[in-house]
Image (tube, rainbow, N blue to C red; front, side):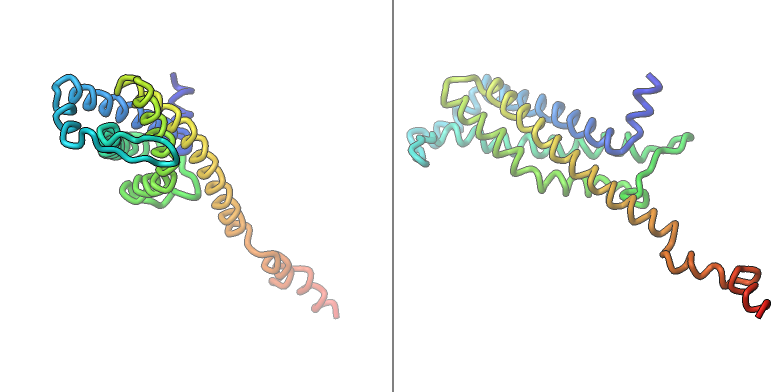
Length: 211
């Protein structure tokens, strides 16, 4: 258990775990909300407003009622995901504790809001990938007769796996670049090292005295 918690202390690990956990929790909330709307007939009533309408795109018939489901799914999942992630990120990286957390050069000086918002900004840039995959699969499965819950769950599961891989590669690259800059700052430029011989007692000073 200690080893698992030690790994969880690494930001790149807990960000991925928290994003996946937030995604799963948000997915459960979204599926629950959409299922509740379906069984309560509220979804059917809303769909009746656009019944018979549709859109033909690239030879594919899109029913307005199914697009309504997709739009509602997007809104519910987005709100749930953002709220849940902020809570998880605070618990993992910013709650007061005695043992010092591991810090990376790229994110060491960020406050909670800046840190969590940076992650959300990075996720926002990747969100088109997530939602295009998730909602496209959901819409396709709905048109093939799948239930709202199954279509939503499968679509978002595939989207989450792909975007997590892309985000992990992004964070690894950011940490490596920040680490290189920090190492250069610690060591200092080469000319500073070369000039150390001019200090009193150094080789250059000794040569001048001998001359």
